[in-house]
Length: 119
Image (cartoon, rainbow, N blue to C red; front, side, top):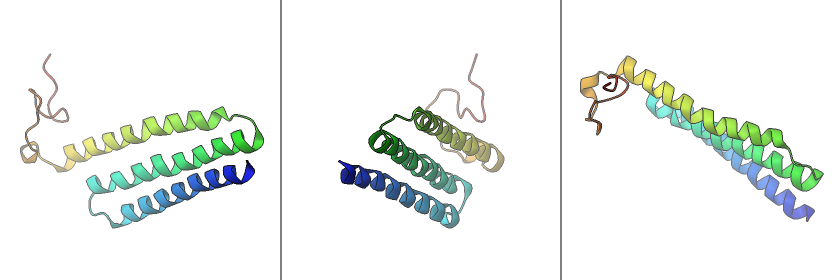
């Protein structure tokens, strides 16, 4: 069972490294803030998530004990990274894009970044 667990752990580490590399490359090569948000969010979520999954598998399969800390870190990461990217995108919209340049929203009260919903 040891070679199979080594292969599985190595797979998640390689996947994490690839996502980290691609996210770094995207952060450097993409042109503006709205494009650049995507690369580090994916690199953080999938890259660091892959390392954490590999760590959980290592402690479970090799050491024989479940590591609850990595699970909590993964949950925190998967929740906070997209929310942070959303806040950065909303801030970018309000600072750099006038409301009249945005497409029509499908809501009855417009874009929530510019208009508060009716009470």
